[in-house]
Length: 453
Figure 1: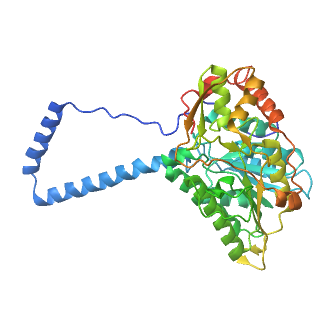
Figure 2 (figure 1 turned 90 degrees about the vertical axis):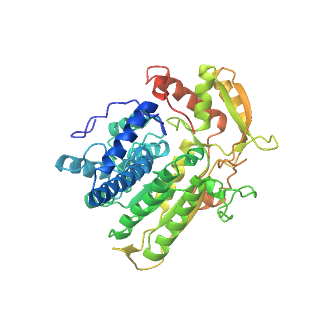
Figure 3 (figure 1 turned 90 degrees about the horizontal axis):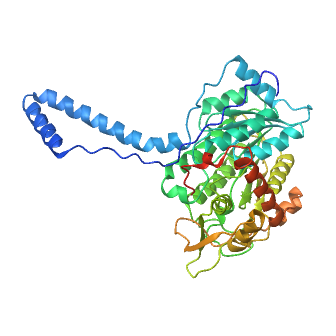
C-alpha cells in the first residue's frame, strides 16, 4: 500500500434505486377533527394573518415539490461528496496519485473511475507508469459495494479515487489546481436505457450537466488537456444500416440515455470548434467482462442461472431474436488507451482558441454480433447449468433489435484490433463471478434488493 494514502473504504451494502416509501394514511375521523379545527382557527384570524398563513403554505408547498424532484438527482448522482475533501493530506494524496513514474508519462483525470470501464482503464494506465486521479460519486444505481471493491483495487495500486460529483465545479477546480492534467478520460455517466423512464432528471444531471461542467473546467485551463470520453453505440438509435459506421446518421435516438449521449457529442464538437479543445468520442458496444455492471443482461443472466431463477430474453415484435456486438473489457481498455495516446493537443488556453484542434469519433466494438439466445448458451456452458428461459416482447422503452460495429476507422487510426472472442471472454467473466460472489469474496447478498434495469 502506498505511504500516506487513506486506507481502503469498508464495503457497504447498497440501497436500491427508485425505492418508494408508502406514507401512512390518516384515519377518517382524524381528518374530520383536523379539518374542523382548521376552519375554527381560520375564522379567528385577521385578513393579514390569513395572508401570512397563505404565503407560508405556498412556500412550504414549493419546497416540498422541489425536494420531491431533487432526490432523483441527489440520490442517483450525489452533488456533494459523502466525506469532506480538501486539506493538506488530501492535497498531497492527489499530487502523489497524479505523478507519473517518468516525466514523459501522461497525467490523466478519470471520471467514473470506480465504474466498470473506468476502474480497468485506470489500472492499465497506472501499470504503465502514468499519473492517474479518479473521481466517482458512488451513486446507488447498482450496489455501491462493488464500486468500493473496485476503489480498493485502485488504491492498492496507488490510484486515488476522489468521492465527489463532476457537476461540482469547485471540486474540479481544486483538482486542476493540484495536478497539471495532460488528458481527461471522461467515463462518468448515468447508465442504462430503461431506468431513464423513471429517472429522467438523473440522466440530464449526470450526462449533460456533468459533461458541460467538465468541459468548462477544461476550457478555462491553461494549458488545456485533451479530452477522450465515452459516447455509446446507442446514438445510432433507429438506424437500420449495418454495420454501424461513425459517419452514419445519429439523429433518431431510441432512448433518453441515447439522447443524452448524442447531446454530449454535439457539446463536444461545439467546445472543440469554439475553444480549441481536443475531443475524442468513443462509441462503446455492449462491454462485458470481470468487475462488470450488475445492471447488464449478461450479469443478471448469470446470477439467475446460478440461483435457478428464470431469465427474461427479449424478442422483437415479430419474435425476432435480439443480437448484440458484445465487446470484451480488455479490448475496450486498449481502445481507450490508444485514444489517449493518439489524441492531438488542445489548441486553446484560458478559454481562447488559437487554431483548429482535433475532433474524432470512433466505434469500439467486436464486429461480430451474437444472438442473445446463443449468448445464453455460452453462459450455460461455462456455468455448467441450464437456464430457465422466458421469452418476452421487448418493451418500447429504448432497446433496439441489434448492434453491429464497423471499426475500420479505429483500426486504421488507433491500431485497434478486438482480440477476445465471446467464448473465452465469458469464461473469464464466469470465473471472476464465482470468485467474487461465491468463493471468498462478498457473497451474493450484496445484490439483494437490487432491481436491474
